[in-house]
Length: 293
Ligand SMILES: [Fe+2]
Image (cartoon, rainbow, N blue to C red; front, top):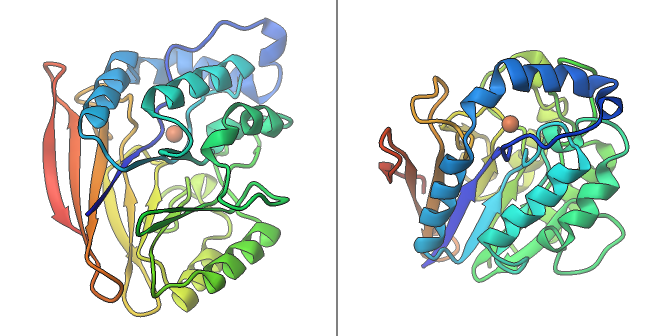
């Protein structure tokens, strides 16, 4: 059996200090939003409690599906690196960026450098995304939907060049040999306002319908959800987890992460999901179990 842990959207608190000049542009809206509203919903204590509980379960691998930062300030990427290191090294932890990691233009190189070991593919290539990481029976395919957008937008886009590379990668993967898990911050299923959507959802769905996958892991909405999209031989579950730093009682769901226990073999895979989340007294407990495959 292979156990994968999945957390998302830690929005690692607290927001570091910065000069007023750094807030010129879109960051000022995010800064005010954090100070007036969002900051009260995220807790470092919750994030640390979940990370500790996750480590105690000894998963074979950990997937972090984006939004480690809030405003894409360079110190936030350093905080992200420290957090990833607290989970494990690049062999055992995979990350993809979210829209808050690409909040403004010109930061991609900073997070690529800071988190390089966590999205280094098995085969060095010219492009960071999509990456392919084989771990035991699992193939992790990491996509980036993180693109800078206008203020008040939180949409994402894979883009045609990355989508083409993704399709080729999925075509070449020996599907008879591995459990394929696609990581993408913006979920390609479920409902949300159009300004938070993945722009090329249909193109992504077309690739999955043509080539299949065993599971898709996302974040973005800060809610627990399991939806399905059309696959090759059967529907493919699209799983979302709440923010890993959300306070207990948050209307969208208190901080939680998922454990996926993957067993079986091609054609007869099984996958059981266990959701563990924070409680009002600061503990972490199993909230639900669900059979995905
Ligand atoms: Fe987020």
